Length: 461
Ligand code: PM9
Image 1 (cartoon, helix red, strand yellow):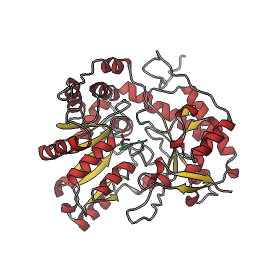
Image 2: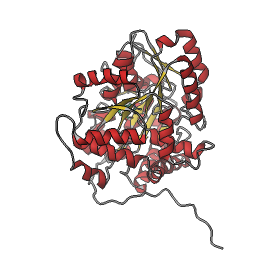
Image 3: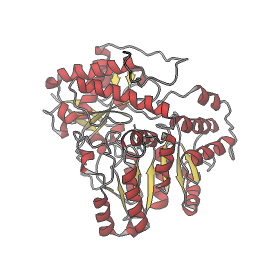
Image 4: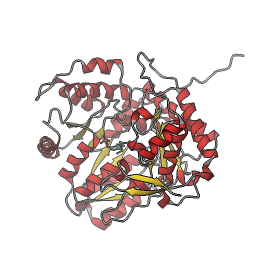
């Protein structure tokens, strides 16, 4: 009898252009990483074979997006591409007013300046580097209200992006709603390992914030990936499309910031959105100071066109199934090799637990930074530290010591093949087998802000 075979996650596209890569030797890579101060951000991209530093701005655009770029209206004011983008955001996300920005942190800067005053608290489902920094620069303090399971790489909770409602309630009782301008809700929480929030939990957050008159601001950088996990894991959503789920998520929030360089499949761009006229008016005042006129916000017309098309492509079920399917393929392969990865497998990459990988290194010896450098030396695969270096320092100068000390293997969208995934997993295994010999790092240069981008290290003897 013929067996029914479950179809694989194969890509709903084919290639018609390729980018040739330089192949390097181990000796060349050892020199390159030493010269880069053991910081993968400081490597030259041409010295990298498979670039998993980030999924930000690294996606392959479609033929439709490239064609759209040719229709860029580069007028200073009132570009037709702005109106196309505005329409796409209203149609697929449902927000009323939008402000384009050059990327996500441009939107965070404006939003924080509009909504936060000195002494405010901003609860959120785990920090993100640039988001928290803009909150702090505006005079606010971030408070983590994510469930405890999110800080445990071994917990297999299906919605590790959920808010602990009791933590949020306690914070509101302690500080009062007047000191909480908004609750910051990220979909598919990056620093937790690309982990989703459930619709049920989001509705609970909505109900509580509504009772106290507090806004929800949505970091929707990876909202489609979150929607896919809701479709796959949450009762009642099996038959809904990713597009419908994305729209519903946004409907429980009052505004958003987005780095369109991720989900929305563009190499540059972002926006701020709000349903409140007053907030929009103030943001429109500020965008001309920091980004550009309110109908381009630091972007070319062609960039806004590519974003409008990318938003539509990003909410297609076929696209997102292949996107997450590829990551699951890599994660399963790594788990088969015994490599300690954050579970469940996330939406935009594999997060390797550097504490378990290199248990002989203390957090002050930068295990995740060390591991990212070793993977690069082994194979030319570039990954990113998401641990103590990324966490940075508190406003009082003390180091944050995050529970999660991770190396992120971030997968760009529509870029690499299954054979690339095999090479990546095999390289992680090579380093895993040699792990006991690996020595840590010491930091020899530390920038004031977002130190992970430019810090330099030396090998400990
Ligand atoms: N995320 C990432 O690699 C870009 C570099 S690291 C700062 O994960 C969220 C959830 C993000 C994000 C960027 C931003 C900022 C906001 N929220 O990079 O300014 O993951 O477009 O967006 C990076 P921009």
